[in-house]
Length: 452
Image (cartoon, rainbow, N blue to C red; front, side, top):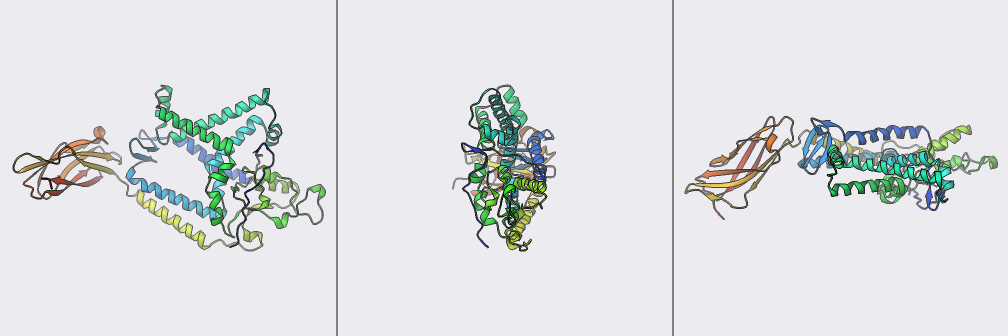
């Protein structure tokens, strides 16, 4: 495979004092991007408010050591399932990268989505990109000052809403708002919200393209993932060169009229005509801008398009290839493993701890007792009563509630005592059995009769 050229040093257009202004454009790819991003935005801000049986529909609760996942409750013991989901997601990302480049970055990455939102707020308050670029560096007076204040106020409002919503997936959002209204929110939670809001404000409003280029690891390893058949946003130099403006065009001039719109609409400020670059996120804004110019000039679209190196060289691009098939196989295996794992999640979680105060208690010549603490957590629906029994190689008696009411003692440590009669070994394996409505569990522990 030929080395893919990567160009990282560039100077964006419409730049003043190191800042450049992105020009918004319209087109079919931007419409597709909105079709993918707006539902994701709606889900992000909406799911946090959805409840199921009085509980949040999606919640990662560190306080209660449980995960509410679309109506099902999972314990921390089921965390490998989330790891499986992450592996499946990474495999899908790599599959898409080999096939179509950084389409995830351009069409669905939260950093890109929020950056476009902040850019739209900037245009709404301060005007189009050329106006902002022309006024950059000028003193702020009257209307311009008010517009600048309005922009940052809306940025802060969106960043705060983002931070509050994100936190609501770990702490019930209704509890957060109630505590905030009553001024009872903890300093730790206040600090977390301020940090998340500040990071969102900085990432989407101030830093923007530097995250895609310097902080995102994908910009660094994309060259390893791509091959000659990867279809990514590309400039057809054989058709566009030599570029020339319309008034200077000659018989041998290419279709590129050097209007610069492809650079002005790029959210990372690169010139796609220089080749594949680490900062390109395949948002296809340059494709829409160029297609619009070609339409006006009555020339064929596609001067900038999704194309592979092989296609640009006039060769046929392979659809199936080993690297793509490998990532597809890993993706299918990961999805299958996660699906199987969700069919066998923990319905009843049991923990047993010995009383560390005394190893055992000798009641008489024949009877020895051990003390334990037991905690039962149910992750199944309609699970209220749990029957408890103890079994072992000998005559054992359980002292404590034989039936645990989860409505009153869920996740609570309960004291129990087990007494054995005429138990000869110094250490005997006991089995505690827990039976509920359609769910059961067992846990083994040690019964001591004398010190070793």
